[in-house]
Length: 142
Image (tube, rainbow, N blue to C red; front, top):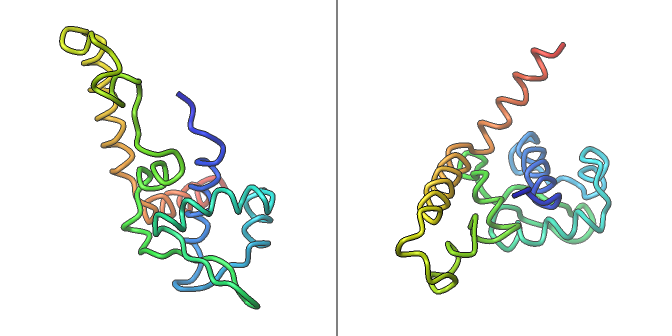
């Protein structure tokens, strides 16, 4: 499983927005410049984040984007699910009728355990924590 580029850029964009002063509207061009993303791709990744209530948009002159929630309330799982839907490692976990072997398949149990652990890890990390870690990493790299 590979996280899509859209999800990767969505996470980077939310972290960038969290680094701005609270309630400050960030211009689309500034997000594109700092995150090395095209305006069309940024629009594509922001739409699900807006729909999920993670990011807000302001239209018109002086319009742009800002976080709709406190960054401490936004987890990596929230962003992942906004961009990619519910996390499911295998088809048998998507639909109980996808495979008739679920009741005895030993691999089904492994997929279920791995999925639950991944969900726990992605829920453990919120945007405030990621901003803190990034600042610390930048400080230590100099």
